[in-house]
Image (cartoon, rainbow, N blue to C red; front, top):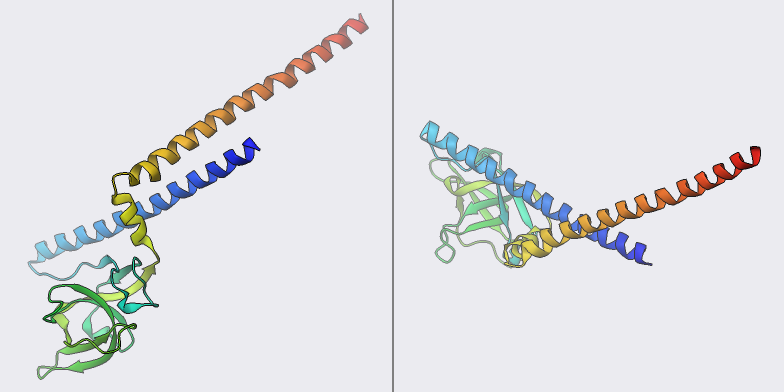
Length: 208
């Protein structure tokens, strides 16, 4: 019974550490892409969105396609390659949400008098389209991947107790489990040898 409980706790601890590891790899990847993008912009004296960006969704406007606390990976994409049906991330120019980064679906591609592309967008869960069109300069990129519920991990780890529960306790659990396993293996390893030695000794005495 104790062995089963130990195995379950060991599995839970490893799973928690694996989840934290995946989350950290995700964060490192995003930061690396962002830093590289910024360095290139400074070197070329030109600003453009990083090649890859990541955002945690905080609004249900794209439900059920993208839910609250899902994360999206956004790839910088030329406005010419954006088509109707694509999900894009952009900086809003709407008076109500000015300056806020939004992720919505393109429902119509238009052009202004100068030939620049404009995008009419709408959240899948919204009844009406966004009131303002998205300009090329406000485009961050196209959503290429969704990572479900990673926002919960971000929130949990950011709490004071998060790291203790998610990292420290599982590590201690695995260490204690492995130590007990080693002790048990060593103990069980000596007993058969002693029995074997006694058996061998008895045979030797008979032969004499």
